[in-house]
Length: 353
Image (cartoon, rainbow, N blue to C red; front, side, top):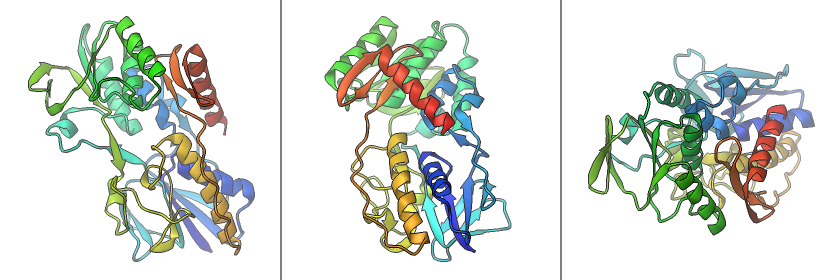
């Protein structure tokens, strides 16, 4: 039996698996999915877990079942590309492969800031989002919460916490002159006004120098804080950064036009670990996964794969609580209830796909 191993049950990995199953996999192929959790989790909704507005079951989806697919649950210790095997922590049995898909996602980038890793919470994994939610939920009335980073994740975390806990004092630390600097000015203005209206303090031109237990030090002064959540940048999973392949300036693996590692064409990379002209997102990982599945289908059936078309993303949606939002829809900036409903619709489709 030929062995295909998919590392990571996230958006890219699951799109590849589902497409392969839908297309009909060769009878001599066995697929192994390796993930730390026994389910696919909807990472785009982890902010709601941190805020306490959604339950775990709302962001979990069962993996598909098939007699040629099995799952290994645990933490990966090493990706051994020389011997073509995956070493799992606390396991006596390694996972060998003939074809490998790496879709391990990203982790927080603390930019070398002292205390950031030790004294801040994260929404990069479900487990970390749960811990953040417990800390926020346990705060007494008028507790202080700081969210570092005013990109899409920071905006959604801060607004969802505000909706969940109207009593809390919330600060959003923005390194730039405006929140959501990558978005249209109309959206930037709308979100800024939402924070003013909902009493979320935004500190522009922030420069977090270090973080202590119970304090954030910004631009030369420290302010007391009960819970700090870090959303100020990501980088590829450390296992990927350790691999002996060429990488771009963001430590993402440089690939050929078929998403293959040039040094080893039997290795494919999807999502946040793959060098791309697009910013990382669940949508991008899904589109890449669909193309990789087409390439793998051809390769596994002994055919020459077709060069994939250029990816064109449909736009970005963000939430401001449960009934307000923003986004780019059909290349136009949209704010209010409509983009929030659209985001809920995308989530509904994801759960049923």
